[in-house]
Length: 341
Image 1 (cartoon, rainbow, N blue to C red):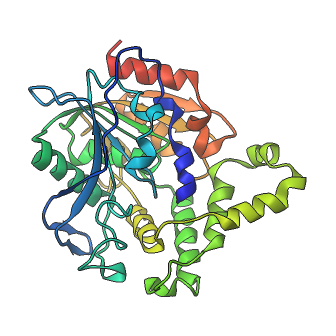
Image 2: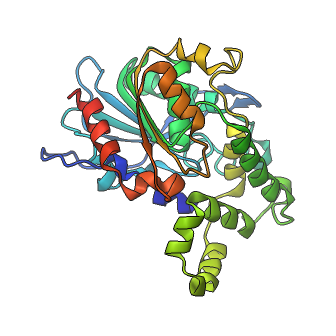
Image 3: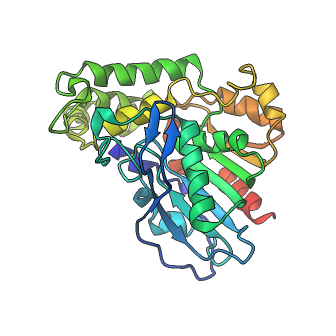
């Protein structure tokens, strides 16, 4: 959703005095036909932006992954790309399948709308891996990170390609959806499915589904934060602003939400996070939010213990947006693990 542009992670912002490269323009790469859970994406296109230069042995890459409904442009502002020293690292921000930039129901010519095949988070990672191999000749990166769905993708990288990265830094993501996460996702999709203007995805004009906006606005933070930031006498304006929020293509949103359904990196390991953890090779920094109402933090916290990863738990009534409110311990931990200090 467009209001997720607020999720630009302050956790990534550090003070770096060395000169930085200028941000790159939006680019698109063709990676060929991509087999996905619902069939094949014909001539799959992946969007990306890069900063800095790739070193001679092609090992200084830092991959940043987009959140649910987010695009690389959301992460392309100076407050984000300056977070990592691009005189040392080659930063790649890659658009996830279904975000309206990479291949999606909204932009596919041959498989437009409901003709687009269903895909999974595993398929997202496969498309990113193929991009790095085909476009840049990269077979190993220094770090992979992302917030929210970007964090979820980072967890999937840990098992899909365990030798690919030195460091993995998932932020407010999860390795395995809890029943709460699955109920929240099911409710989200049910609201879309039952909206008459959505018409099962067969619409000519992108509908305005205000109930989804209201649900997301309510869950992004916490009741305490809402009471503080939205006084009672401001409710009419808050409600009107929420209902008026603009939204990208609803089929794109629905397909990405469906890709997250029942997410579990342990599905090939008997659903056991303990068994899965034994296959993780990269060093990890896991950042979770104790009061997250979008992504339950319990599995991420458990996985940190199972893997011996550095764990930072932010206890803030900002909820899912806790990182965006800033946290000194998390920022310090990110700088330390990225620089090896």
